[in-house]
Image 1 (cartoon, rainbow, N blue to C red):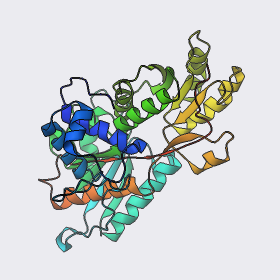
Image 2 (cartoon, rainbow, N blue to C red; image 1 turned 90 degrees about the vertical axis):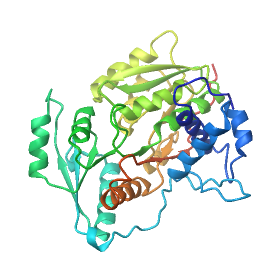
Image 3 (cartoon, rainbow, N blue to C red; image 1 turned 45 degrees about the horizontal axis):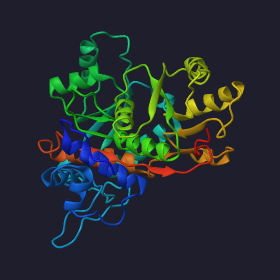
Length: 365
C-alpha cells in the first residue's frame, strides 16, 4: 500500500484508506497491528489509533480487546440488533423531507423507505414522507419555515436535498439528519454509502486491470456523494486519468455526452456509471458508436441490481448489504430522539460489497 500524502485531515484519510482495504478484501478477519498500519500508511501511531477509533464508531471494526488485534466486522453491518425506544419516547414523529415524491423515487429508494417505515413502526415512531421541491428558490427560507409549520416533527430526515435546506435546518437548530452526504459546510448527522472508500477501491481495481484513462458520468447539479467518490479516485495514488462526463441527469444529456467522451482520440477504456438509468443509456449508445462491452469499453456501475445477472455480459457493480441503509438511518434517528445532545455529530458510513461482472475486464489496448 502506498503511503498517504500530506493532507490536513490525516485521520480521516487514514480511515478512508483502511476502509478501502477492507472493502477490497485486502484486509479481512483481523487488522494488522498499529505499528504495521503506521508503516504502511506513512502516518504516526496516534493518527492510526484515532482512525481505528473512527472505524469502531462506524461499526466497521470491533472494539479493541486487551492482547488481541481488532476484528473486521461484516461489511455494511451497523449493529443489526433491534433498538427499543424507552417508553417515554414512543409516539415520536419523523418526517422525511425529500425533493421527490415517493412515487418518483427509484425502486431501491422506495424499498429502503418501506424498510425504514417498518423499523419505525415497530418502535412506535410515526414516519412521514413529504416532497418539497426547492430548486427554483434562490432563498427558500420562507418556504422551509412554512413546511416545518405544516409538518411538525421531532426529527427531520433530509433526503436528496441541496445545501440550502441543510444549512437552514442547521442554523435554526431544528433536529435534522441527512440521508446521504451533507454539504461540506454542514455539520448535521448523516448516513450514507462510504463514497470516498468506494472511489479508492474503484480506482485501485481499475488500475490493477491496466486501465489508465477512465470516464465518470458526473452530475452537473450539486451532489456531495459523487464529489467524495471523485475525491477518493483522484487521491488513491494511481496513475490513472479520470475524465468527467458532465450531464444533468437526463437521458438526452447522457446520450449527448457519451459520444463526446468516446469519439475523442484518447478515449477512455472504462466507464463508471453512478446510477442504473445511466447504464441503460450506455448499453444502447456505445454499440451505436461501434464500441463493444467489454472488449472496447469496460463498465462499472456504482449500484447493483439483481436484474444485472440477466444482462450479457453481466454487470460489475457495488451492492449495499440488504437492509443496512434503512437500519443505519433508523439507529441514528433513535439516537437523536433519545440522546440528542450526544448524537449531534453522529454519522454512519456503509460499505457496499463489490459484485464482479463480465462488463469489467483487463484493458487490452
